[in-house]
Every structure is written in C-alpha cells, then in structure tokens.
Length: 248
Image 1: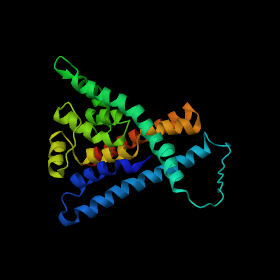
Image 2 (image 1 turned 90 degrees about the vertical axis):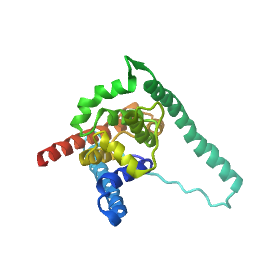
Image 3 (image 1 turned 135 degrees about the vertical axis):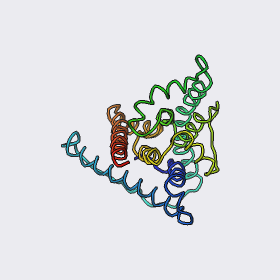
Image 4 (image 1 turned 60 degrees about the vertical axis):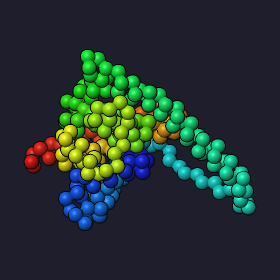
C-alpha cells in the first residue's frame, strides 16, 4: 500500500500472462483492468485499516494538519534547481544507496555461496517453502519479497534468478518466454493472484521505512508500517488459497 508505482511493471506482467493472455485482442484492456482492480482493492483495505486504527490504538490522539503558504515571489530558477537536487534527489539517492549496496552484496553472496552443492538462496527458499505454500506461493517467491526490501523493482528479477539458477539478477522482456518460465516452475492462476495481492499488501521498501522513521521519530510506528500491511497480505493470501482450494 506504499509507493505502488514501483510495482506496476510486475503487476502488469503477471496480469498479462495469467489473466489476460487467453483473450486475444482484449488482453491489454483486461490486464489493465485487473491491475486497477488490485490497486483499488489495496486502497479500500488501507482506508478500512486506517478507520480501525483510528478507533483503537490511535483513539484520542490529536490529529491536525497545518499548511503554511509562503509569500509569493518571483521564482529563482537557480535556487529551485539547487534545492531540488540537494534537498530531494540526493537525499533520496543517499538513503537508497545506504540500503541497496549492502542488500545487493547479501543477494550476491546468497546466490554464489553454497553448501554441499546447494546455494544459500535455495536453502533459505526451502526453509520458507512450507509457509509460502499456505499463502499459495512458493519459497522462492517469498524469499524474493524479503530480499526485495531495498526496492520493489528487484523482486521479479530475484524470482527469475532463483528459477533459472543464475548468479546474477535476471530481467526478461519477452512476455511469452517469461510465462513459460513461471509455468514450468509451478505457477498457476492462484499463484498469480496471490503474488499480485501480496505485491500490493506487504511491507514498504526500505527507503520508505527510513522516511517514516525520520518523520515520526518512532521505531514503534515504523514497525507498525512494516507489520500491518504484511500481516494483512499474508492473511488475505491464505484466505484466497483456502477459497480457491475449496472451489477447485
């Protein structure tokens, strides 16, 4: 429910392959509607959770919004560019590098270090696999989401890296080839639906968490921002899997 734009390519690819692929000329429209429906679902859940929180742990806490309008002056292009670069761009990049560099090293080490012919990445995925099955996923998918904390964009490449047994992150542009790889590794319509749900309903990326920590000055609220959407996503995926298994 945070910064959904970074998850659009992932959602569109899955919707195109597993939901819209069989409808010929209408596939693009159906894929778009599917992604919109998932996002709207996430927004509705966010509003519901916000309402519940305001009636429980946030009850009685003062809520205010103050907007101060600065005096109107003629824009100074040079000052605007400097402030945009140093106050915004470099600030975000610095936080991203602080998290992305160590995370990239961890992913590389896990993919390249093995014990008895099995990489650490595979061992971690096998550990998570029983729990992931309850969510209609597999261990590699769940591991990719966890390792994708630095940025949502690397979740799919990590999944492909795991399936193809490579030592580097993978990105495949061919939708047909991508679909074949996923189906060969056990993906079904249920997998696609739950991956889309969990993509919308899981912890925000590390940069967002750092921003929350800075703005609230509270580890408690940062943990809440991490745990609430994640637990909600896990429960809904489990519910979806249970309903799907009963119907099918």
